[in-house]
Length: 350
Image (cartoon, rainbow, N blue to C red; front, top):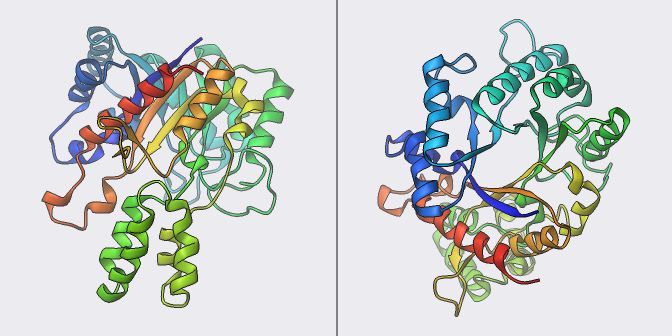
């Protein structure tokens, strides 16, 4: 039983867009520099001709996996609710699209597909026979603000019943006895502070004099005490900020690592969400994501002998794209720093 490291190719979206990396370059990066083997992809971003790629692509993909000794982990798919001009995608049609993803994931060697957040159980049920037949799991992403423990007060965002979505899926798993349905928790649900990139973006776009005052408070708490920033901003600048600006300086508690314990048997993999990998003060060469509780989550997984992949999902590039190119974040460097942290935490003694 072991925690293994991987990367979602979503992490390299900026480099892919500008033609600096393709999926083969990403595979080489995993093998040569990260020394990890787990691969997660976004279906439409990686697969030419999705959902019906050529046999040549499938062969090339599988040969590349073998060449670099990589393991396809999660095949990320989405259900395009506006696919048809005359109606919104219904649940029966969603199940059919899910079947297409299951077949393609199988052909490419993936162990499970990661679907949209809060996938309704009747959509899962409509594709379950295919999942069982192909031996490919269906796992939806537990993403902020969806909690693990039921919280009926949370309504409306991301899915029909966000406050009880996890509970309903667990009940479905137990009722059917299936081993092919589960979850991909996103590390963002275990936030411990606001993201640095979001803070910096808001400071760039607000009144310069106000931004200068807020920066004094921000820098006094940087980097490891940013969980206190929201309260300090509210205390000192109440009424001076827009709601969007206030949200950038706060963080919303969604889940504790211990909430994972009852659902660990149904967790297929993790999204290692990160925005800002920074060097730990006083520890040269060691990095952390100050907004996330990676260390606590990994410790809990080790204590409970969880076996699976944490796939880095770097999302920090977009907050800087309003700046000139020289200010942009280096995705490759950020993912490498995330893997320094992952490897160190995984190998640390309990």
